Picture: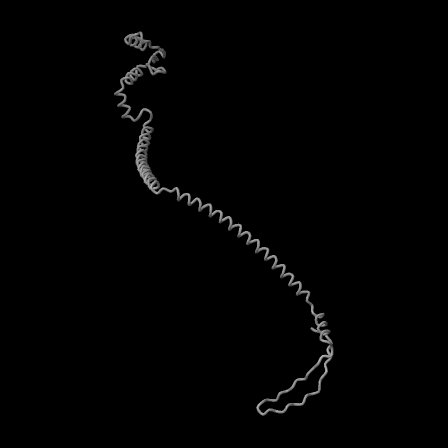
Length: 231
């Protein structure tokens, strides 16, 4: 509030003007005059104002504007730097593109495409053939697995029919069975040659080991084996 001493002086009331026939009554306000100097009143009025908060607010606003301007300048510099980098990259890419267009040969490109298509067709054909061969080998593998399972089920000597057929066709096995029935076991050496005989005499409980020498005849060994068995 303004706290200034004011002294007011009332002037004499002015006489009322005559009434106009077509207007309302006009009332003349009181005229008041100041006793003190206007400059003094203004000085006192200014002294009663507290402008320090306003000055601080203006200072804060100026600081905020300065910080905002610095941030804006920094963003502008960063944008300009990015723009320069992009411009250099664009120039580099444009140069590469122009060089590629200059050295491009459409005829050579078409020939390369035809060659690649031919290779692709060959590869697809080879892949198809390999797939067919793979299926054939898989079927053959399954058949071999089934055959192996059958052989494992039959054992090392095979089933009964196979053993009989093999014994009938193999004269060596027949001879060995005959010798074994007489108590004579013919044993092969490391090379597979039958050059050793073990003769067992069940009546006497004797065992004779005979090394067969090729210089003696089969007739000699037959008589020797028979005499040993008869004991």
